Image 1 (cartoon, rainbow, N blue to C red):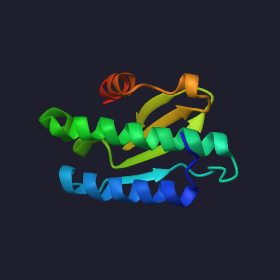
Image 2 (image 1 turned 135 degrees about the vertical axis):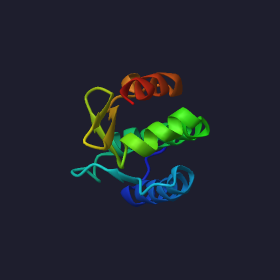
Image 3 (image 1 turned 135 degrees about the horizontal axis):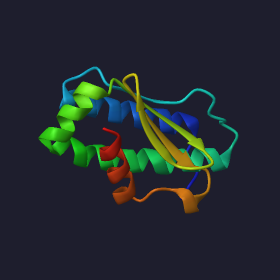
Length: 120
């Protein structure tokens, strides 16, 4: 997987944000967590992978009435970041999606869908 730039990631997130705002009819925001290191190819690659997975999973979730309602009611902000291990948490209206730094710890679409559904 090629290493995206920080600007490319922000553009992708902006496009996703516009799409999902229209679908969920809510002021949902999508952003990278503060502190992303633009000089870290490892972190940018993991975030690029996570952005692609988030797009796939949210597309699937928004097609389902229950999933769309859960997003609209529980999530006001989606934040993406990296850490040693992948994780999904929902707290105070923020859905935080974390990609592991190493490709071996990246979640498949199915794993992310299951984890996200359990969190919502």
